[in-house]
Length: 135
Image 1 (cartoon, rainbow, N blue to C red):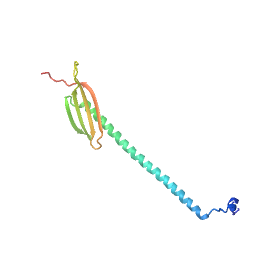
Image 2: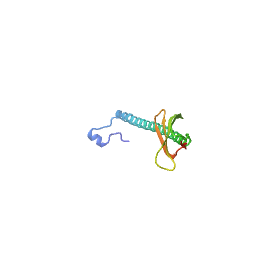
Image 3: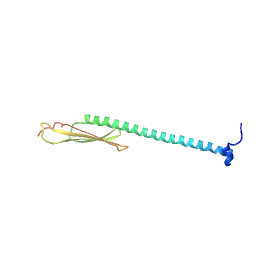
Image 4: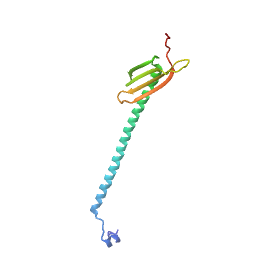
């Protein structure tokens, strides 16, 4: 094995310094650590976003179930009813829409507000009004 430097280095006077080769290993290690750190940071951010999305989806499902339940099961009477259930403050309002029809049509709206996050959900429908005795 020839221990002499290649011809190009002999002509130009450039010779690799054996002491400086250790610096490249440190730079390679630092680049590798930076890549690992960036992957971990992105992974933790994605996990946090997934947790928030899961929480919002669960909240939306609960709100939908409560909206449907209140729309179908709340007492049929004109006016406003309020309450608190499953972490939601709710309001059911039934009002006469007016107009000339053989039967009265009422608008029933249900509003929910999540107490801890203040998210707001609504649902409305038209239905026949509750029977009111004529004077």
